[in-house]
Structure formats: C-alpha cells, structure tokens
Length: 463
Image 1 (cartoon, rainbow, N blue to C red):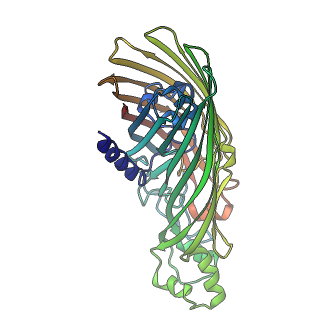
Image 2 (cartoon, helix red, strand yellow; image 1 turned 120 degrees about the horizontal axis):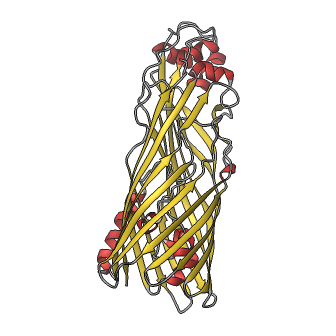
Image 3 (cartoon, rainbow, N blue to C red; image 1 turned 90 degrees about the vertical axis):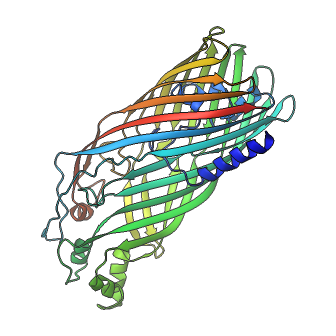
C-alpha cells in the first residue's frame, strides 16, 4: 500500500507542474482545492477540517486528523466566455485614419476545458504536534479567442499557471484551540498573445513603405518563483462547533521572459536591421523587436472566517466569509530590458468578499450528501474590464457527496454551476487605454456571457 501511495502522489505532483485553470473565484484565484469542499460550494472550509486539504484552507485543522492521511483531487473545469458585440469599431492602419481592418467575428468561446489536480498529505507527529504538505494550484487563468476576431488587437490568448508547495505544521494548544502555519513556495508562468498592427506602428513612427492592413502577432512569456506564508486558528467552543480563521499572504513576483513577434514583413525586418539608420531601428525595435522583458505581479492576500456546527448525528451546517486583497493588482506593465515600457494593462482591482453557506446530511454510515451556495464578487469594473479576464460577479450552486469505501478510505465528489452576471466591456480609450493605443487596436464594446461548470472527485485514505 505504501508503494501505491507514493506512485499516486508522484503522478499528481508531475501533473501539477503543467496545470492551468480558468479563473473561477474572484479575479483569477482558484478555490478548487478539494472535492469535499466543492459539494458545499467551499462554504466553511477554514472550519471544516474534513481531510488533509485543510492544509490549504486552514493548517490548524490538521489537529483534527489523527494518524496519517492523504488526499488526491482532480477538478475538471469548463468555463465559457462568449462576446456579444454592440458597438465595436475596427482598428485603423494609419494615424491619419486610413485603411480600417475588417471587424470579423466575435472570437468564439474563450473558455477552455481544464484538469486541475491537487494533493495533500498530513501526519501526526505526537499527541499535540502535526505536520503536512500540500501541492496545489491557487491561481490560474486561460482565455483563448479565434486568432482573427474583432478584439484580436486587445487579446488572443492569455494563460497563467501556478504551482504551490505548502509545507505546514500545526499544534494543539488545548482541547479547544489549535494553531497552524505553513510556508508557500509558488511558481508562476504566464503567456500573453495578441495581434499587432504593423501598419499603424510604421505610420506612427514615420516609416514609409508598409501597406495598409499589415498585421502579425506577438507573444509575451515570463516566469518567476517566490515565497509566502499562511497561518490559521481553529477554535472549538463546544464539541459540535468549529470556528476557523485563516490567512494567506500576498505573493510578489518579478517575471522575466521574452517578447517575440511573428508576421513581420521583409521590409520591417530590414528597418529593424538598420536600413533607415540606427535611430529608426532602435525606435522600431522598442515597438516590434524581439527581446527580453520583465513584469511585476503581486497576487493577493486573503483572510477567511468560517463556521461549522453539527446539529445532530445526521446534519451539519457551514458558513464563511473570505476577503481577498485584489487591490494589490493595479496594472501589469511589461518592460523591455532597456527600460522602455512595451505595454501596460490597467486592472485597478479592488478588494472583494466571497460568502457561502452549506449543509451536510448523513443518511447512513456509508454516505454523506452535501449542498451549498456562495456569492463571489468581481474585483474589476466595467471601465477596466479586459477580454483577457472578462470577470464579473458570480453565484455558486453546488451539490456533492461522499461514499466510505472502508473505515480508512472514501471517495468524495462534487459538482457546481456558476451563474455569472453579464460582463460589460467598453475599451474605447482613456483611462483603460491611451488614445493612440485605442486607435491602433480599435474599440471593443459589448458584453460577455460567462458561465462555469466544475466536476471534482477525490480519494482520501488514512493510515
């Protein structure tokens, strides 16, 4: 059995390294860390401590898990994001307004099916001391539109992947109070692509000889690793009641990577090579030249308060409120190694709340039935919403359950549907874009119809 456990964990760890998800909690946070929690729409998870996934939600909860326990989770996530055009205007080819591009289609469905795995292992070191480690995906994003859609000069593909390794420790202070804390090593990889209006760039730079409607694309890639922390407190005012308080720190990155361009004409390549002199070459290179780039990214801190109460042997109720400090993300500025700003995406996010309630029902010793509802605020506004993250407030409805295979093993499963409000977008110019950028990209005016379906399953084993 020990050899089998190691094989399962190693397989999950390998899969996590390539996992990416679509933003399902506010912004692009991923709360999908357990199937047991999904059945309750993740209500009350900082107080639930049902299995080793408590390492993510509240490490103090490990003191409620005697012996050793591991959990392997698979989350199948299908978001949908479709754009409805109302008043979009095309990009122009020159600063004088000549040669507008074809408007083309609405981009198709920007959401992609994703598999996001997680794994957790906890063990009791002594009567009061517990340790554990979690491997998770706390942030993720992927939107992918048709390459020739009307918003292509704003965004085509946006992908952010994370992996988080979270060694933790917990201590049982008394029969009613436990504390826990952990370190978080987190790695992020990001990729952004969009169409590039070469005709407009040449016109703005005073470079003749580039035909109207000459476009290509660019790809910005970057990655970095950083450290953070989390801690939690678990209080039992009575044997039937758990109260949890949990905090996860912000994660500050300085991504480094490259920008590369495709579709440049032979003439533009000659300009970059110095055909019009070094001054023009340098100016053109700052706009459409391949090279090294950096970007600062600060992912938010969060604070959760949670409650779980066992009414009787069959019923539990859960509730929570989680605050996420998305106000730490003001903009994403991509800067060349020369110090020249390549592009800036303003976010101006605000801090938000997520609240949820849930219930568990145990009809017999083998089965548990779960349900939950939650409301999750968006950190963005209509003024700054971008097709890269067409986020809006969402309501979670979830159901799930557990089947105990044996005294030591169980299968948990859950399903949730997220009803997302219509997300208006109006990229017409300042302040979200400069006037020059708006002319070269065209406006994007309309709304996104979004929804998400999540199916999760997990295996837990105590030994």
